[in-house]
Image 1 (spheres, helix red, strand yellow):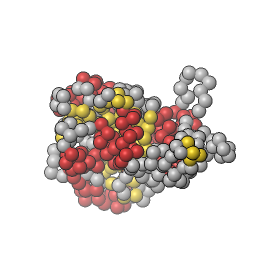
Image 2 (image 1 turned 30 degrees about the horizontal axis):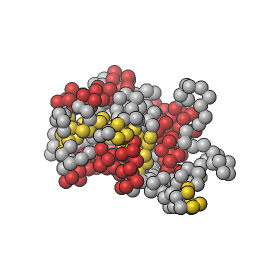
Image 3 (image 1 turned 90 degrees about the vertical axis):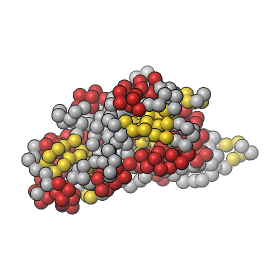
Image 4 (image 1 turned 90 degrees about the horizontal axis):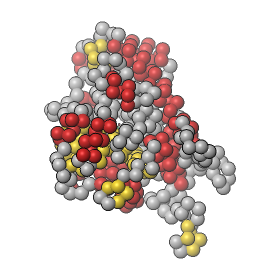
Length: 396
Ligand SMILES: *Cc1c(COP(=O)(O)O)cnc(C)c1O
């Protein structure tokens, strides 16, 4: 986008225009899907506009999405991958070496835990857990000289704990380590971790960024950080090219198309979720509601400072009646389909203990077996409340 003054255009404007200029060759308003593996050269190593050679290294559709996402996260570069896990794997292999240690916030995504615990451990990477979302506990978990990465997810899944990104960034800086924030739940519409001091942002673009439950993808976004004597962006760009787990052109197109409406969708996700959380809290057949937008949430103040424009679209709660009530509830809902994943326009419900967080059973990080997680979609709020009311009644 051409900047006519120094003011950064607003989020919605950047979402629609940055990296998404009309095609210069034909004037197509939407940049085309460059569904090609390779690019013609006019002489040996004489590339055409954009310098594209082979789509593992660069592809205009993927690059357009990467530019759009880097702009929304206020980073300098973004790298798009085939899934969130592919992005995380590439990032960790780009920045870590055998003997390094990684500190994980206790309720990181199960796949992140599995990658570190079962895959990277075989390559000599060790890890420790922070027992809470607190930065002082994170500082205690750091092994001086060995910890190279701190990994944080906020708000967290499925308990919606909120962490102070700036305080964690200070702990990382003191340890000469990188702070990585998984920003999947908040999305760049509500939170920009790089602005708060984080060094790297990762996303499962499968969730809010794609936003329509029709594509898998992941991304790594960085600012101008240097790491082990090299720009971090070069290390990750090299790993993306060398490892090759890139987002394909059609997947990149779907993610870019989703990202254009992210600010608008997120407004509705947030307003619906706040109403649903208040509705659940008002019920005598609900024992506990976790949502950072409720005043009684233990980190509500912090959430109000770090999240702008809303508290996100994910809620978890425990119905009265234990595991039977939780299972009956998710069978009974009609607008909320029983499914893993989140962040799409349609509402989803799941029981994390047995569906997504099974690997935690028997550990100190096990989640309650009667906990229900809702991904609150953008349908009409009256229909949400009617559906929840009926399903809670049937589960009783
Ligand atoms: C889904 C998810 C991931 C993994 O992303 P995939 O696209 O499924 O590989 C990582 N982090 C969070 C917070 C997620 O919700």
